[in-house]
Length: 383
Image (cartoon, rainbow, N blue to C red; front, top):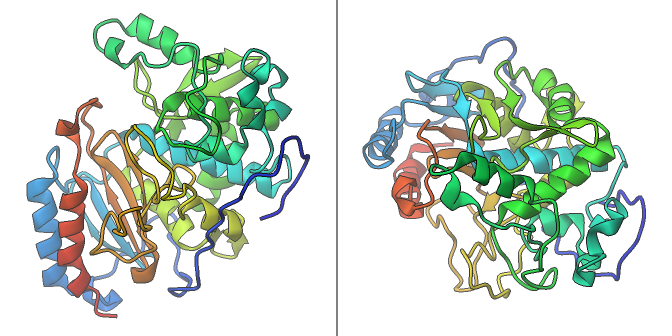
């Protein structure tokens, strides 16, 4: 993608891994409702699918697979009994923010290689290192940016007002953690900074951009996005899904979110309309963080796109979900909310659960569980 508006910083290596042509484009799209088909009619062995789903239901915690949806080639082939339940999806929201980045880049309002100081000139006043942060660095958690008050998680349940104070300070620069592009940290302040920039560039809320350009065209009926009120006269939506009082980012349900996954499965095309630039989809859903980077933090090097978790190869030569195809990617929120897209199998898998977020691993579905699920699912795909 080369949608440049300006150049403001030294050229840094751009690691763009474009998805190949594996898997046919989808030709069937839901209208008012999903078109329902049997698994067998869409090349999925019903009994083996049930085995995979049964395993996940028993090991995923929360509501199991009650809010799960399985889509093949645009057909709804399986749904749980609570697939219409609407709730927050927390950090899955981050991919909605990067989607807005792609929309604005497609409109040439900005470019992913633009530097953040082009939109926030005071960003590097106190910390010169911030002059070199590109939008792609913010979207891949490699910017090194930190907010004035970095982490208010410990106040989430004990002091919500103080927690909110921390979150609202995320767009006020604090000391950098590292030089842009040299390390990785999964960190909400960088997402808030990107969301703030996108809101300024669009001159409208993230929700408004996404609703008009994506949610309405693809038929998402249940879609809302929590906000922090006006910022510079424009509503500022929670770009990271950072939890808090009346917060949690995007609210939707599995059936509508499967439409979002189908849009990404189909490289940004919905029916006869190209909504997202396919080259942006390829960048966003493939690794943008070199596996060679060293980080002392939660390590997603080698397998992180523009807020999408990917199945690319890590420094040790392994993939996160070895039983899944290489191009599999996912949005991940609050441990138990997932949007999986599997291009090689032409599948979209939604697994949601409404538990409040936790800063411990106790509330998550481990990657080992997901890998075992894919181990059971693989022989179910017969064509």
